[in-house]
Length: 513
Image 1: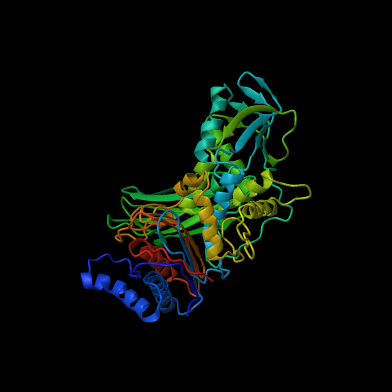
Image 2 (image 1 turned 45 degrees about the horizontal axis):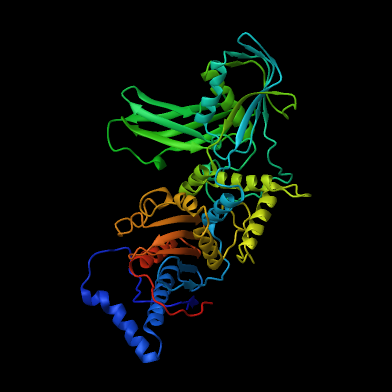
């Protein structure tokens, strides 16, 4: 039987996300059962019903997962009556992407919600008429979301300044992070090493290092293109046009990159596409340095600026003159993208920023420095970090560890933080947006919780804030570690459903393991 910890309750059952009205007698059955149980055993009705809540969660999890230690849960009432619930809450678990909440909450308090990243553009040359006779330096600042659109808006100012030619080189300076030993490798078990979720952080990161490929069919046949359009990325379009009909899923198309010795990539796409339909794919195909150089060169050409020199990496000279500065949106905007859509590369870049901004003497690795800074911050909040492993700040790791109790303690701290509203606004709304958009639909819970999700092989997880039917808010963390974990999502959705419709409320507290 799963180990549980209780702290009191009214009738608490764990029905599935089916809100079909039921007869009153069936609705009251758990209440009658818990009252009779309390009378027979000398236990209070509140404590008996709390045990009923946890035991039904346990029973459902055991049937679904076939292991009595696969589920870990901690649920804590924050602003109303309720009984803390714990199931295997002190068991170290692999958290997946809910670890992003630790990173983003830490960033709000360590860096501050108004933190920005600057990307600066310099020259060591002189202006003569419409020509800049010198090199064009790009000094990156570690911006997790330096987009193509933002770059285009900034670079077009060169034409507004009357510049149409740069005679020197394009020089990239991405020395913002210290990573002497590189980054820990993540061994993905999938068949697409170019998938967006595998993009690594880098001082040279732009546009999430992604290429957006599209194919559309019309009466002319099919047309294929990519954004950005880079010189060394070519599309071999072998998609055939079909008569009008239902549009196929993206899984019906195969995107196969072929690399040559000159860092040139040919992407072959095959499939059949009805007229009027479109298919898309996001791939990361180039090293960060090459991608960013080609992107900037392409955008300069689009704005009417010719860059005559080569691409290279170097340090910006101290006496170089500032030409342009691009300032990112604030941290609050950044963490919204991280948590709503679970961006691994942005979360990992954020951890490096925390490290770079908080290095101490003798530290040479910003990933390690960032983890150290977060542990110290948690210690100052009296949150137990024993056994916790942050690793990369995103949860994209086989080594990350946290207990449900630790996660819930962090959420309680966040609830009381001056920046709680900023963190909560960054999290997916149940049944409405982000990674929760398709979960718990038609369960009477739309928008009733802000839940970060996690997904890895043999791992499913949730963490966040959810409201019960009486508008009381709960901090909840749930993790399933099981082989396989494919039905772990249903178990965790059952936890959220039960907390909303049948919350364990009362006044009597009991000890939790």
